[in-house]
Amino acid sequence: MTSRYYAAAIALIGIQIAVLHTLGQPFLAASGRILLWVNDPWSPDMSQQLADWYSFSHVIHGFIFFGVLRLIAPCLPLGVRLLLAMGVEIGWEITENSPAVIQHYRQQALAAGYVGDSILNSVFDVVMMSAGFLFASRVPGRYVIAIAVAFEIFTAVMIRDNLTLNVINLIAPSGWGPITAIHDWQAGAAH
Image (cartoon, rainbow, N blue to C red; front, side, top):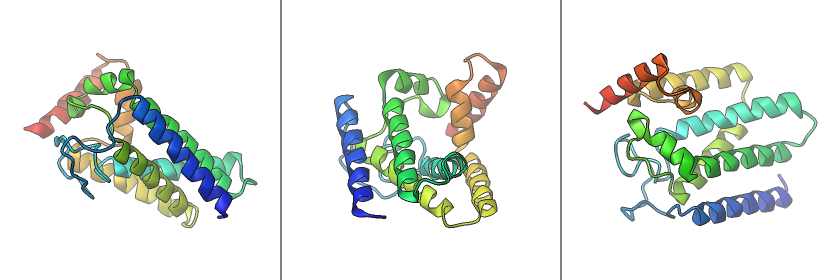
C-alpha cells in the first residue's frame, strides 16, 4: 500500500478519536492501566484495553468486510477497500459508543455495567478488524469461514457471547422469547 493509504487510514483514526472524545469516552480505562488482554468478561477493564474477548468479533468484521467488498467492488485496489472497511468499522465504533446504544447494551446480561469503549479499545477494535481484513485477503475463503466459525464457537463457550449473539441482542425486540433465553444463559456465566 502506498503512503496515501497510510495517510488516509491515520486520518480516519484521527476522526474516530476526535468524535469519541466529543462523545465523552475516556482515552484509557478508569484504572489508568494499559493491558494487552482482558480475560474476565465481568471486569471493569472489559472494552477498555487493547484486546479482550470481543476482539475476535472485530477480526470477523474484517473477514466479512473483505468478502462483501470483494463481491461488490472487486476492481477497487485492496487499499481502497480496506479504507472503506475502516470507515464502516469506525462508523460502528462511534455508533456503539453513543449514549443510546450504550444504554441498550446495558439491558443485556453481560453488559449490565457497560460504559462504552475507551478510545484505546475502540482504536484497537479497528486494528483488529483491519488485521482480519488483511488476513482474509491472503487466505482461501474456506479457511477464513472455518476460522470465523471457530471464533464464534470458542467465544460462546468461553464467555457465553459472540458476534452472532451480540447482533441478535442488538436488533431483536426485547421480551422476545429467544432473547430472554439468551439473557438467562448469559447471566448464568456470572454464577
